[in-house]
Image 1 (spheres, protein in one colour):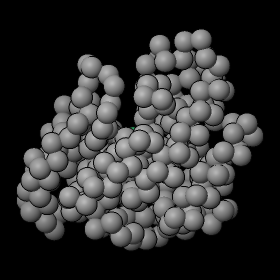
Image 2 (cartoon, helix red, strand yellow; image 1 turned 90 degrees about the vertical axis):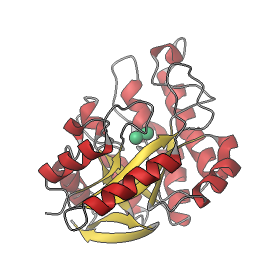
Image 3 (cartoon, protein in one colour; image 1 turned 180 degrees about the horizontal axis):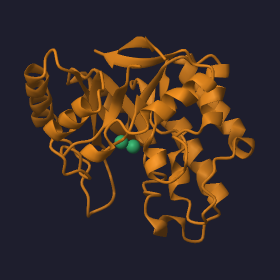
Image 4 (cartoon, helix red, strand yellow; image 1 turned 30 degrees about the vertical axis):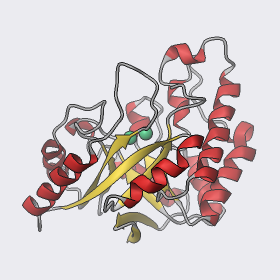
Length: 267
Ligand SMILES: [Zn+2]
Ligand SMILES: [Zn+2]
């Protein structure tokens, strides 16, 4: 069974200390047929103790070197994960044109300029209100910028809910979730299955199987798999479970990207 990891961070991301070569070694050890680096670029990220700017020139040159060094051993692709905000459309449109990316993930990391990763974000808020707001911002992000290939970890805000109820209720948020999925499908965009949900203790990937199934039901076909690893340890983790879930949700293929074009691999 072919396994590929299309969501990986290295030390070019502000929240990782892992050299890109260490990721490649881990991928080879785990028998991955292809990997794609997707280091973070979150323009206008508000927090002072971490920086999500990306030195894209240096990053590109490092990944190009690895591609030459590992030709014939594994496939290495050059990607980026953009932290979207509604006002950043024009900036990112011009950014993605400047580099020869194979793959671009668009993600919601911030709600109203604040990061739900930090527990203080949730102070005095009802979790339901925050989750709905996160999905509404996602919708707005897609309306304002659609030059990504897949949307990242659609329901990942569930990882940070402080009251312990970390289950995504499609029943509660189905209306806005459907709107997001329909918009993505109408624009020819995919989603990813992000196995970082297992690392966060959710017991399932992000998004959850209900959303994956709904994307398929609505006609969505483009789905990449990624661990969201920031260390060698998690590179390629839980890919088998993710493939099993995709099959159960009605998918017959998963997707790789090269030069921003999808390639379909049987599951
Ligand atoms: Zn992300
Ligand atoms: Zn990521």
